[in-house]
Length: 121
Image (tube, rainbow, N blue to C red; front, side, top):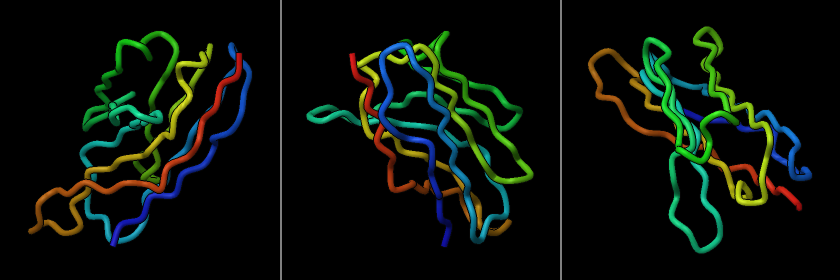
């Protein structure tokens, strides 16, 4: 099985910064996408930032200019640097990875446990 280990969440004041990390481990032949999603109470889970093969990135409109997603392919790790945080960013953040465990297998999505990010005003 594939496991995603997240770290970096916490409580910060508005305007502060956090850096989330997510390391994928287990049976990984290749990964073609990793990303960060978030879910606030009473709301749908939404994509915050994603990164695919070739390091192309995409961001939610609310994250553009403030958040940066990067990946370290050698470590199967994805990062999300969050700057100028706002109370509206408060949510549980989930790491996602699209993984092929063997060359003969299809890609499947795996999720981390989630890490709480709370931004106080």
